[in-house]
Image (tube, rainbow, N blue to C red; front, side, top):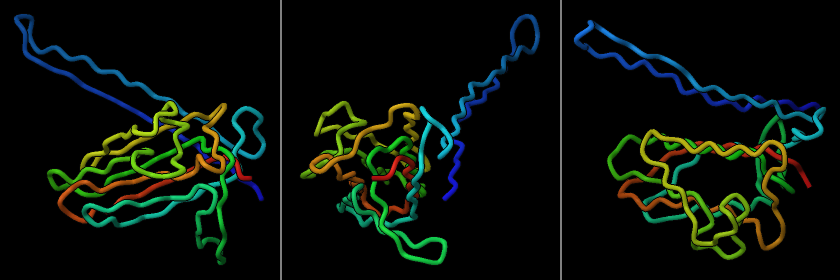
Length: 170
């Protein structure tokens, strides 16, 4: 199977204001892009799992990185990661307080690798926000006992979100 993915992020800005010298502006951007593929060595990846999900208020998605089911290319398959190199989560809600919490907090066998090994860690992904974590060279290891990614909805409403995981298969 051939596999190639471009993971990129861009931040562009324009700041303008009126000064004693007239209208002044400043613009710039920060861009980064990484290609992961089966042909790479340091930037090797051969697996992707993605989904759009809904999560009721006060509930968790416990995603087992050693057994994620997916239907694609006309069949059902189980995705098993040895390493994850990209974690991308997009909160599709726009309501105040509709926050997702991403991280190992509160789960047995939690995947702590990208969170510094801290089992209580979590990143808050607010409404219409996203989390983009990328470690293309070494990735974050997945193993028995270090395998459950927790997505928690602590908000008042059901939250819809998209998730993409890219990495190396078992």
